[in-house]
Each structure stands twice: as C-alpha cells, then as structure tokens.
Image (cartoon, rainbow, N blue to C red; front, top):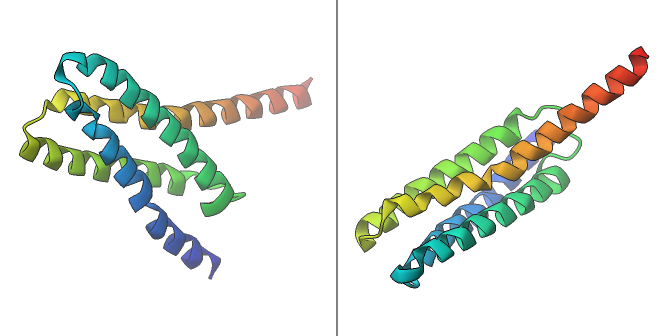
Length: 130
C-alpha cells in the first residue's frame, strides 16, 4: 500500500520540476545579445533544481529506499518531458534549439550524490577488511 502512495505522490510531484525547467528555458527570450549570460544562468538554475529534486526524492518520495532505480527513472522522465515541452516551445517561438542543452545540468547533482554514496560504501568495506 505504501508503494501506491509513493507512486501517487510521484505523479503529483512530476509537473513541478517539469514546469520549472520549461520556464527556465524561456530565459532565451530576455535578450538575444546576451544569450550566453542567460545560458549560464539557466545552467545554474537547472543545477539548483537538481539539488532540490534530490532533496524531495530522498526526504519525501523515496525515503530510506535501497532501490535507486525508481529515482533514476523519475529523473530521466522529468528530463524527457521537459525536453519535449521545451522543443515545442522553441518550435513555435522560433528560438535557438541549442539553448536547450542546459537541461543536462539537471542530472549533475544526482550523479554526484550517487558517486559520493558509492565512494562511502567503498570506504566502509575497506575499513572492515583492514
């Protein structure tokens, strides 16, 4: 029963980061002459959203979960649906599609967190073997 509750909370949570990432893509509309500045700002916002995503996953959606596959798929689905919405927005607004590459930085905090967790597991197993 708890799994169904977590799945329901996941479907309620998913539109929030999707809409925030899609709204971040509209920074390209600000000023064409300073598109690189807004691109770096979009990357920073995507990294911040990635950190907030990790907090929500670990604290609310999948607390104390040993299976990380659900959170990986959730992150991938959020990035995919955001990319689809951004492509639609860019197509109808006539914007440069290369700006969309900022979305890759959304997953960087997630990758860093899991690399850190695996590193801690290596340290704990090496201390037991000593």
